[in-house]
Every structure is written in C-alpha cells, then in structure tokens.
Image (cartoon, rainbow, N blue to C red; front, side, top):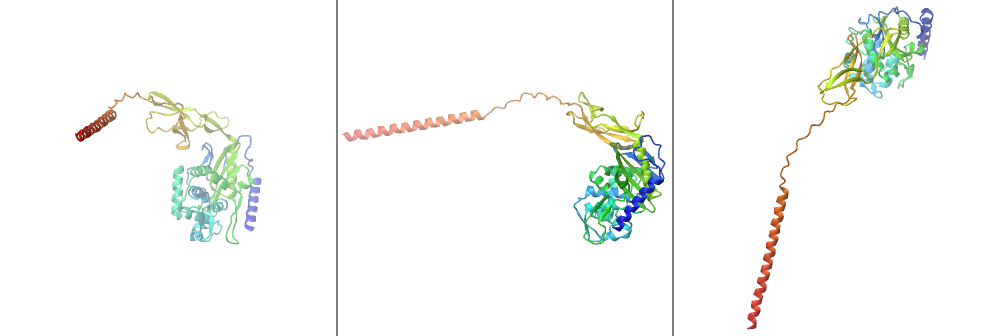
Length: 428
C-alpha cells in the first residue's frame, strides 16, 4: 500500500507540474495551433484510421524503445497464448540482467495466469513478468524474441530489432518512431490489448504474502486525460524516456510516439502538444466512396468494373483543398477469369504513403459474367442388346415348354393305346 500511495502522490505532483509549468491548451482547442516544438529527439503522430503521418521528427532514426518494447511482447502473448494458461515462473525471473528495474517479485515455481501476467506487464511494466511470459510462449528468451522480430517484419517495421521482451538496454535493441507507431497501431486493432492498456488498476491473486497484488498503470495520462485511451511508457538510462499513447475525440483516434525524451515530465508535455495539434488541425474525410470503380478487367469480351467494398478515408489539414499525399495501387489479378459473379471479391487496392502501405481494401465485381453453356451434340444411342436377348430367351423357353407339353401328351396317348391292346387280348 505504501508503494501504491507513493506512486499516486507522484502522479498527482507530475500532473500538477504539467498544468502549472506548461501553458499548453487542453485537447480540443477550436483554433488551429502551430506545428509543435518538442524536446524529444524522435517523434511521430499518425491518424489510426488512415495511418497517415501528421507530424514527424527524426521518424526513421534508430532509438532504444525501453519498456515500450512490451507492446510487442503483449501482442505476441495475445496471439500465441491463451489468457487462461497457467504460467510457471522459471529461475530466469531472478536473473538481474533480465529483470532489473520494475518487478512484481516472481519466484521460481510460482504460478500466475497469462491474463494476470499481462496486467503486470502492461500496467506495472514488470520485467520479471516479461521474462515469465517469454519463456512460456517462446520456450526461452531467444525463441520469444525471434517471434517478436518476425512479427515486426510482418507489420512492416523493418528497422526494428528486439533482443529481449522487456526493453532493457541491449546491443542492437533498437526501433524508430515510425516503426514503433506501426507496431502500436497494429496492437491497437486488438480489442483485448486495448482493454489492458486503458485499465487503471487491477488486483491479481498471488499465493504468497507481502508481495504486490495490485497492478497500477504508470501511464499518467490514463489518470489525468479523459481522451487518452492507453498504451505504454518506458525508461532506461541510455534510452531516456519513451512514450507511446493513443487518444480519441469526436470519432477520430490518434497515436503518438516520443523517443529519447529528456525527462518523465517532457514525454507528457510533448504528447499533449502532438495530440492538440492533430485533433485541432486535421480532419478525416471520404476520399473514395464505397462502390467507386477503381479499375476494370475483361472477362471474355465483357468489361467488368472493380469497385470498393468500403469507403476510403483520408486525413487532411482542415480547409485544405490540396490532393491527398497518398496513392492507390490496385493489385493484379492472379489469373485470367472466364466467369465471375456480382460482388465477388477479385483483388484489393493498397493505400500507400511514400513507400509504406497504410491500408488495404477489397475490390469486387460490379456485375456477373457467366458464359453460355455450349449446345451438346446429339449423343449416339448404342444398341440395347438386352431386349432381344430377353425376347430370344422367352421364345426359347416357350419352345421348350411346347416341346415338353407335346412329349407328355404323346406318351399319354401311347400309354392309352398300349393299355387298350391288353384289354382286347384278355377278351379272347
């Protein structure tokens, strides 16, 4: 309880300092705000729906992510594990090189569900929880980091390399603001993940006494900013302060990343500026309505339009009439088609910003093309031998029957004649 009280006091003082020392308006000022000046070395702000970049500062420079690494660790755990799994902590939870810093003091042999370890990971930022999860899912730390790196490449975070599941400083453990935004945006699509990162406190059962059971979200904006919906903070001496956050307002959702920030206070000040800039200066509008034809193809001699199954939204600066700085790439259809049905999905269109794919939408046929069934030539009827064979067989049986009947009558007559002769002989 003393730890909880101390953390709560720290949050309150930090929030008060931010309000007093930084004259930054609350999210949602009606007037446009200038491009923010921030103290973090690397940063990016994107619209979650469209994926478009609204602000960037050194977005592709490599930085240490610190505990924002745990976003990917949680994502792998949710995809590969089961929340009801009972995780048994191994000896590695006592390894200081793997778990130094924030911990929940797991002991070897202690069992905690994966669901509760994820609360420890994402709220308290517990490094021993990260190790226990990694060994449960990946078999060992290396196996788990292999999964993390493979997922990063799948998402498109090509400049990211993870060396451990916690974010402790390690040679080559690096990401970029842009990559981290891609990873966080992908994780945001998972509703279970979103529920975790917006949770303020959670009591988890432990079978030991005098150990932490109340998990406390150290993301201070969760406590002070109603529009903020969660994500993750981080710190090491070499990484500095790092922060990923999401916020929602008026039907829009933004995601910000700040890396190598000089202080714990500055991550919140910078993030506040980014969100204010993004919500105030930009809007989402329909770029291509549902049903818009983006391409066509020939099916035989018939042209067919490929139309959107959903509308394409793009983010623009309010009042701007400039064309969007995105491009549409329709993927080729794999093979030549001879028949299609209306509303059949045939390919997709990628929304591209520079060389990065932001979104993908299905394209379907707007009409059916069904080739006529060619007339079948009259089939040659083969002679049916069954009928004449049966007829011959019946005729044969009839002849046999007639022959047998004749012989029976003939023998009967002969017997009568013979019997008559004997009677005549007896008369004389």
